[in-house]
Length: 210
Image 1 (tube, rainbow, N blue to C red):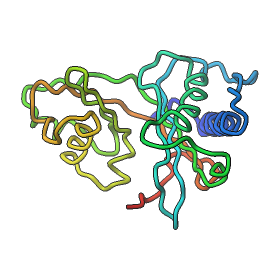
Image 2 (tube, one colour):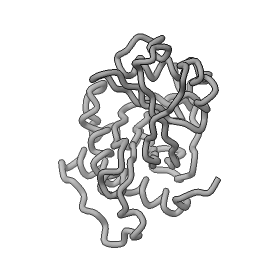
Image 3 (cartoon, rainbow, N blue to C red):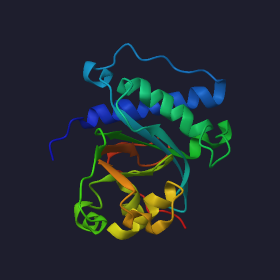
Image 4 (cartoon, rainbow, N blue to C red):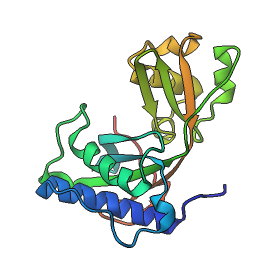
């Protein structure tokens, strides 16, 4: 794979997300864009920040919010997404300062989503590749997104990935079979902490709890 971002870029971005998380949760201060940002990290890009808690060597989701489309400079989107994942994910109560040392920060830099074209929805079973693609399912005002690492972490096949993306959108799980349901796909470069505040690596792997 021809990576767009180096391991050093990943370390820079995850550390920035961690700093944004810490400063906002502790002091309600939004960190400024650092002066030493490499120019290519100022280009517009989609990004998601995922916060996990580690429980007996398994991770549990604590927050995940991002920007799927390249509408902000990557470093700005990283700061905003880290804050939103901590305090604005409607599925969870806001992260507290007492939790910060137990949280693992993960960051996914996204390619621009592209609409999947097919004649029969069943073609999706061959078009979508688990481990490569993230998905956005939409129908009308309903929309849901799952990152490419999610089906790997849960051990889903393509059909299950499609079903869960539909459910994330608030649709029935078999809505992927409906021609009115549209799908977009994207890829991601993923970087994250191995342990809370620990080493930052590409494609960190943690089994999901539950």
